[in-house]
Length: 244
Image (cartoon, rainbow, N blue to C red):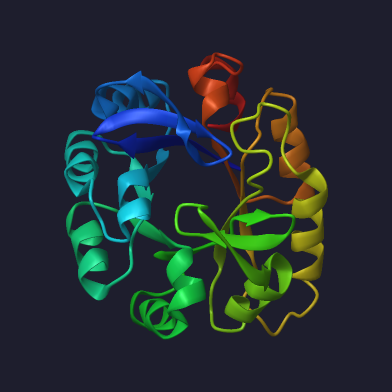
């Protein structure tokens, strides 16, 4: 299972939110590159970089931060937040992203998102399936849609999506443990039909202790995104050696 630390960006700074609420912003470092270098020095290979300004503005904003981290580390970066147009996508890939995550656009502009999957392939395009009470949330989690998470994932599975990041918003930043039941349900229900692309589920939200990681691995999660638990020293980078 891949360990994927998260860096969320507001005003060019490394921050964390609680349940996606921008009013709960806590700045952990003024320099995201410094944080990324710490991850790399510990043997981490992957990074989940989120442009929270972009998610709110509905277009890419912090691509300079992406460019800086991509050019000064060897981390394989998946980038999300505000990617709405082909131009946004070009900027993200040209700035060094190895993968991009599309959430809101997959709900609001399925045609464009499907075009990305078709053009760039399932290795480069990740489906963001962030949810609250199993309903997909969009626009930096400021809006809830009427789409249920499992049918939503299954619909894109049929269109070639492989990688899926699922955050249970109720758990995000709470340090109360991840949604094991939800992830088990997604993996079981999206693995029933062998005709469709197999799902590589990346768990996100609520990770609070190292002991939760082997459980997520046992469920079949392909990766896990860890944010606040690292910043609040609930999990040390050294502990993660087992997965690296």
